[in-house]
Amino acid sequence: MTGRRRHGGSAKWNAPGVTENSGFDEAAATAKGVTENSGFDEAAATAKWLELAPLLDRMMQRVGTDGEFGVASGSSLGGDDLASAPYQVSHAVRSCLMAATDHLHAAKVLVVDQGTVHVAAPSSLARGALETLSAAYWMLHPVSRDERVTRALRWHAQNMRDADKAVRARNLAGHLSLDDKLASLGK
View (cartoon, rainbow, N blue to C red):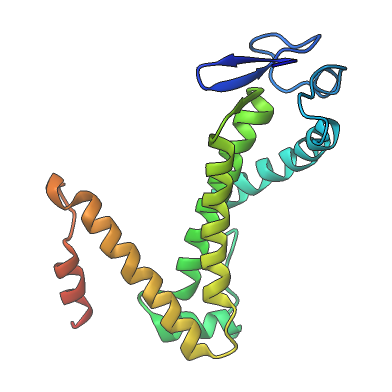
């Protein structure tokens, strides 16, 4: 493989000016011989990663900041939240946004910051981001409030079922079983 070393299931940039721990170097990545497939524009991919990297860093900061994605009272989403309490539509959408951002930022850390291009990891991370962003879109897209609330409640219910499956056998302190959570809704 020209320009890259295979390393533990990943490809590592091995172009002039790039050392094992130097991270992603635009000039080195565009150096002659880095591209192994002439149908792929390595320079364009490098430029796109470098364009997106600071945006992904900023988004990661934003999703970790309390109150950054507030819901305006009187807005359509605010009305959805009132109709779906305690399982608000905005909470489900925000959770999807946070997970997608986390996935995309992890891909950026691997490819840009570490200069490592694993065979499947970036694609898996991108797919996870697309799936969770698609779920957010699916919840927000309907014109009807009833449908938006129904979809968000379906998302919350599936999330609770998945969480219960993941931790039920571990008997974690403070974990409410799915049955207990469902019973609390009737109170």
